Image 1 (spheres, rainbow, N blue to C red):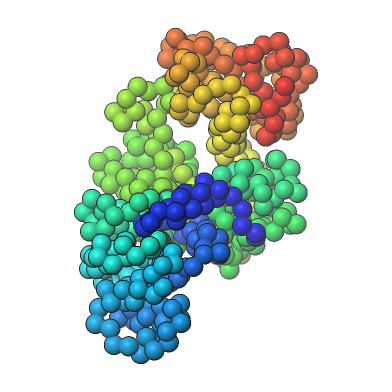
Image 2 (cartoon, rainbow, N blue to C red):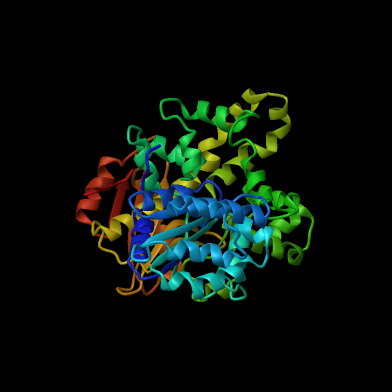
Length: 465
């Protein structure tokens, strides 16, 4: 797959490169494209890229000395007896000091694991050597909890040194679509609902084959690349994966309140809280609050959702059927997919995609609406898929997302009007209505939008005008 997207991240790295000395931390889940981003950034620059290994600190230092000797063209350094890591970094900084240099240490967490004192050592190296030598440093890691504690937290010796940090997220739908330009909007949404915009996953999905075949070969087959991916992801971050698996399975089954999750698992809510907090910190869970809440941090209406398309898919369609898959009864699971994939999974991802599309349409000026915040709304009896608030102009946009096979008609619009009229939190705002459809709209609804500037129709990725 060719390099796609990441314009904002590359722009941020270029800004840091222009500093006299930049210290950037890049972190994110496995396979999200951190190394690919870095290599794209440095391809025309004077940079030393060092990938650490799960070896001893001494062996990593030896490997780094070899890399620096090759980088500086001074091969005699490979056999030099260097007493400390500070000397290693000084060797790098002193080489052609007039030239801007970039030092990248990838999988930084392995150095910390091998030697917990390494952050302190690197702090000294940065403060006393690197930052005054026209050097840009990039520390990169995929162990989120360790990168947070060892580099980003207040307790880390490196706290306050970084000039920028990038948490690399999966590709947004618009970026992801660049890899599948020959496919329809509907097909792209379905693939995105499985891969979640994780670049490494996308590489394994052949867009010349059907989605079903891709899922069978890469996910359902026991030898598939993604067959055990959630196990690898969690074991990389936590010790007792079974508790986390139970929580994720319960949520994937539609239990979003902490009380519901506790009931399913036969545990007390306070026993679950640390596990939920860890999953949120790892960006695998998201605690969602109705967008109209004035004090979201104090709201009791929070619901937990899996914040990763692939994990959600896996816990819905792979984990519950591990027994069948172990017996190579793949067709049984495929039949479950055929019956439930869209209604039980894709339609929810489509809501996420619709929010992204709305943000992009507003940013481009195609929709006159300044988004202050965006999310969803729910109370005891009413749910609205997409709600955005324009605080500056006291406007609120309420939208419904329909992944129907047929064009959307007047009934959906009428129901949306009725819902919004009954919600007290919407009072005081000028309400604008939006309908998102993957299959277009009936002619009568399109005629209304030409006469009514408070109705917006989005057909696939396009605004209906």
